[in-house]
Length: 430
Ligand SMILES: NC(=O)N[C@@H](CC(=O)O)C(=O)O
Ligand SMILES: [Zn+2]
Ligand SMILES: [Zn+2]
Image (cartoon, rainbow, N blue to C red; front, side, top):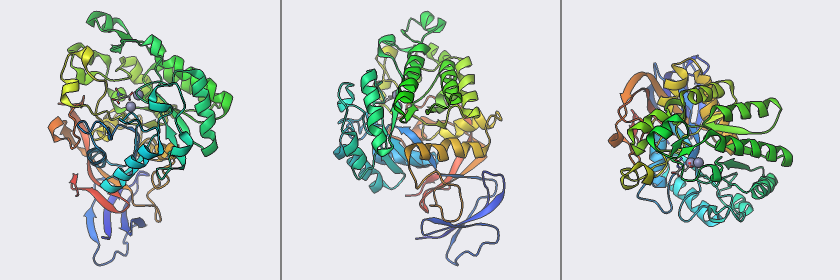
C-alpha cells in the first residue's frame, strides 16, 4: 500500500500541517515528518483538509433502477464530491426491507471501493406503511443496519411509527422520517403559496411537514428512542426542532444543499429539474434553515442525491419525478451558502458533514478528526477556485442537477478512503 505525505494542508482548526498516511491510517500530523523514502508527496498548499464527508441520505437506486444510478456510479459521484461514506436509502426495487437486500447493497459498495455504503433499511414491508419490516434481521445482518427509513414516503400511521421507534431501541437504531402528511399533500407539485396559485400547480404546504415533525418529536419523547428528521425545509420546522432541543428532547435533523440555496421561484420556469420533495421553499425558509444549521438546531447537511433518468425529468412538470442529484456539488454549495456568508467555519463544516452524520449513522470508521491513529478518510479541497456546473461532466448516471450553469466556489482535489485515493488531481483515481 502506497504511503502518502500530504504537505502544507490547512486543517479545520486553522493550523497548517503535513499529514503522513500509511497502512490505511493517518500515521502522523505536524511538520518535518519522517516519511518513508517511497512515499508519494502531495503538495496541498492552499487546500483545506477535511475528514472524509459522510452522507446520511443518498439514493443509489440499485437494485431496480440501474438506468438512473448504480452503487458503482453513485459511489464514484460520492468520491468526486469528497464523500467517503454514504447511507443508501431503501426505496429501491425490491425495497431494502430484508437482510438479503441490505447485504446485497452493502457488498456492492464494498466491491466498488469508492465509498463505504451503509444501507438504510425500510421501516415497513415494501414501504407500504402497514406492517413493520424485519428491522432486527437487518440490524443483525452483515450490513449492520442502524438507520431505518421509508424515505420517499412518510411513516404516517402514528401507531406504527411508535412501534418502530420502540423496536429500534433494542439495537440503538434510529428512525429517519420523511415528514410529509399525505392527506395534506395529495397531488402536491410545489411549495404552497401565492406562486403555486399563479402557476396553477397544487401546493405542498409547510404545515404538512411541520405537523409530522411535531408529532414524531412527541412520540419519540414518549418512547425514549432516536428520531432523525430527513430534509427539513421550512422556517416552522426549524422552530419546532429548536424548541424541542431547548426542552432537552432527543431529535436530530438534516437539511439538503438545495434547500440551503434555491427557492420556489425556480418553479416558474416549469422546468422539472427544480421539482423535488420536499419542494423548494421561500427566501424566508432558506434564511431560517441556514440559521438553523449555523446554530446547531439542524445537525447535518445530507444531499438527498436523487438521480432520475432523462425520460422521468424531461416531461411536463406534473408528470416528472421528484428529486435532484447532489453528491458532486454538495461541498461547493455549502461553501457558497454557509462559508462565504460567514455562517459556518470549516470546523463547523467538518462537524455538519462528517462528525455528526457519522455519529448519527454509527459509521465508526468515519467522522474522526484528522489525527494519528484515525482511518485515513480525508478530502483535500481547494476553496479558491470556481467552477461552472455542467451536467455532462458528472460521473453520476443521471443529469438532473438544479445547479446547471451556476458558478460555484471550490473543487475537491483529492479524496482518500482508508488511505487509498479515490480521487486525485480532481479526477477519479481508478
Ligand atoms: N427527494 C426527492 O424528491 N425524491 C427522492 C425521495 C425522497 O427523498 O423523498 C427520490 O427517491 O427520488
Ligand atoms: Zn424524502
Ligand atoms: Zn430521499
